[in-house]
Every structure is written in structure tokens, then in C-alpha cells.
Length: 513
Figure 1 (cartoon, helix red, strand yellow):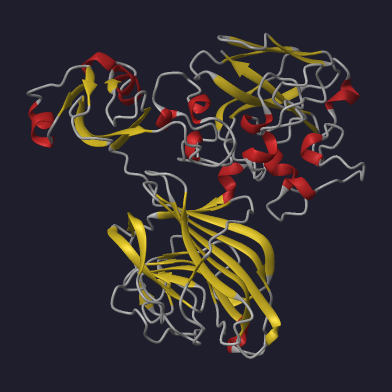
Figure 2 (figure 1 turned 180 degrees about the vertical axis):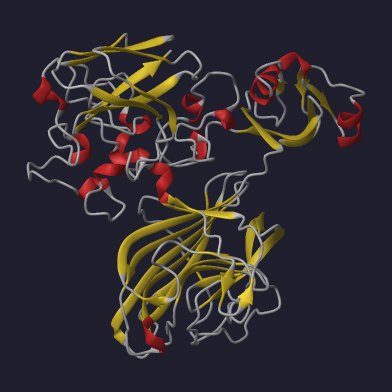
């Protein structure tokens, strides 16, 4: 499918830039996310132009490009700097090169939106704060209505930068960024850059150049270590200790032979497979403990966390206990949109660019039960976990026809219903209702075979099956009126089947149970 969730993830790997040879893998992916507004009330104590703040405490450890930090400095020019020697000193403002570049004037920084701002007039504010509950708090820095140098009141910027505890994710929320074209070439950049400038990641169109935007947001996610397994469990009695059923981890780490996975207190024990821990293991370190697993000779770090599930860690109004979708007691292995962020800390569970708070709505207009959770297409999957909310075969993220990363403001037929909730609108894909029941897929749900019956006079030339996140998982050429696709090798979940029918493309949703 075009423009699916994964195509919105851009890993910026630039090997040559401005005469500097760079040969390193970028440890961050860049993803478009929904726009939202945070709040923070603690003033950053400066108004002097081109200045770093004093060191501000994060209140938690944060890993940036492989190094751990507990405090940062904020520049009046729209970025967070992790270097601890720059507090209260001069902050660069002039730049013209794209990143990465070892001569770029700012290093080891999160460029929420780096451009020359001047809050000396104190017309705007710069604030910071910490929100949420450990171990999933967020450090927030907010530039509200700050003037841009030279243009002053004629060009304003409101930006927000968010750092995530434990996940080490960074979000840039651009509420408004106007253009001041006659100063420093109007240059601005969003991104992350390492300590010597040799590695950087930026969103598309947001490297150094002159641009303006509003209500735009980007997420920088570190590439998770393939050798770390997270097991997060609710704290039943608020004492910081729980018994972990490590069979859950066994199944996740090696489903083909789970009983062969052993767990150990130290890396050396895991390597030698000695002193194995009980399969029902109670953590001995309060709240957080690291153990190790041996799965067919591969050693995994296993991070055990005990959390208070009375907290709504992602603020999406869905109870944390309800986000253990597979009911295996591990909150960390439930990830509806497979974006690497577990649902209980993800405020867009299905990755469709519509916040869960907007989709987790009681009172389904298509049902008689006013207490039911909104399920627009009545497919049994609530909207907050459904990335095709209206069941028209077009992913919600692909119904963002104006390409502003917000499907909620697209209404092609001007009927007051956003296109992602209106099955009558499926731009670029034929309306399947025009064919009546000429194409039938069954059984649905299925666990073995998906049959596709073609009652039209047109030949099916291709059948493709996509996972809910847009990944192509199966494809086959077809020529007969009766077609069957084996899906027994696929995991349980929601899928889409795309059928090429002469010059037409039809999309259907089905479930593998």
C-alpha cells in the first residue's frame, strides 16, 4: 500500500556531506507523529539572546547517542544540548550547512527547531517541567510565541521538545514556526546530531533550509538493541516486587523451542548456562532488575520492571491494565502498530496519526449500546487499535490526503465526517460496493485458508497480503475464478488482502485467529 506507516519512517543514513566522509550507522529512526500540546510551568531563567540556560535536571537518566545524561542545557535558539560545559554561555545562532557535518556549530544536541530566536523582548516564554510517572516520565521544554531575531514580532515560533524516560525517545512538536527569510537565509533545522557532528538524523524537508509550518510533529526513536527483552508487570500490592512467569519470555524469545531458554542472574552464568533461575522468578531488586537469558547460545539482557498500573503512562485514557492485550502479564510485548513503543506508553496505539484519546470514545454511533467503545466499521476492533477505522480498505494514515500528518482534517466530500471515518471516501482505490458481491473473501476470521471467489468477468492477476502495519507478508499470481491463499504460517492478527483485478485494485480486511 502506498504511504503506509512504515513508509513514514525515515532512517537518515548520510555517508558524505560537505567534504566530510562519514561512515557510521545512524542509531535513530525519524517518524511523523500526531500533533499535540504539552504544558510546563517552570520558567527557564533567562531572556538574554543567544544564551544557554543553567543545567536543568531531567530527574531521570536519559541515553542519547549511547551516552547517559541526567541534566541538560536549553538554548534560546530552540534546542537541547547534552554537553555539561556550556551552561550560561554563548549559544551559536548562525549556520548554513546541512547535517551531518563536523563543522556544524552545534553538537551533541536535540534540535527541536534550531533557528535564531530572540526572547529579549520577553514577549514569549520558555518553560520546562516533568510530567507522568516513573519509569515513564517525560521531560518537556516549551518555547511559546518566541520572536525570531531581526523579524521580531513579524515572525514567531512555538515549539515543544519532549524526552522520554526509559524509552530514550525524543519528540519535536512544532505548534507554529513562521519564516524570517531575510536573516541567516531563514535557515532552520529539526534533528539530532552526535558529539562530533558526523552522525545526524532529520525529518524529510526539515534539514537546514528556509521553511515554515504549523502543527507538525516528529519522533526520533533509538534503534532498540536486538539483545534486550523487556518484561513489565503491574505491581499488585505496591511493594515493588512481583513474581514473573518467565515462560512468557521463553515464548517470545524462542517460540520454536521455548523450554530451551534458560534465565540467569549474571551474564557469565547465562553464557555457561549455570545457576539457572526458577521459571517463576520474583525480582530481588525493587521495581527494576536485570537478568539474562540464553536462547540457543544467544545471550539476551532481560529487563524486569514492576510498575503501578493505576498510572496512565501515555495519558491516552485507556487503563494501563487494559493495554495488556494478549493477557500474558507482560505490558511490554503488546505493540499494536509494531512501532517499537508498547501500547501502554504509546498515545497512538495503532500508528494512524490520530491520538488514542480521540479514538477511545464511548458511544458508538453505529451500535445501540451507548457504552461501547467506538468501532466505526463494526469489525470488532475498536478505532484506537484499528488503522482502517471506516473499513474502506484504505489505511487511516493514507486518508491524510492533504499530507499534513493529520487525517482528522480531511473531508473530501464536505459532509462533516473526516475521510478516515467515512467509508464513502476511498481516494485512489475503487469503491468495492460498486462491484456488489462480485468478490467474496471467506472464511473471515480464518486460521488456515483465505478463499477469494471472483464472480466478475475480469481476471485476478495478483493477490497480496499485508500486515496491519503495511508490511507485505505474502504475494501470489492468480488466474482462476476460485483462489485460495494459505495463511496458516502467519501469526494471529488483522491483515489486508489487496486484489489486482484488471485495472482495478480492491482491498479487504480479514482476521487470522
